[in-house]
Length: 52
Image 1: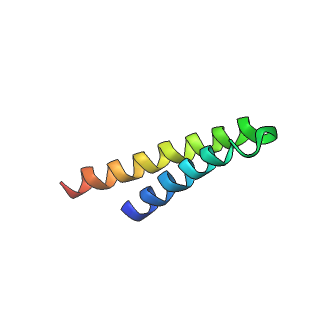
Image 2: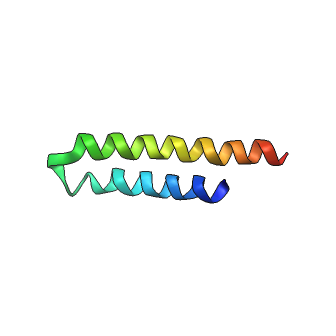
């Protein structure tokens, strides 16, 4: 689960950064990137909570 969380955080940050180079799709990329970032934080946090 931690691997999935890290992947989602990285993918979300990458999509948000990609929005700088694609101004036409900025809102879409930032929305998807933000959602993936939050999902990644949730997965990583759940894994840490279950481990302790």
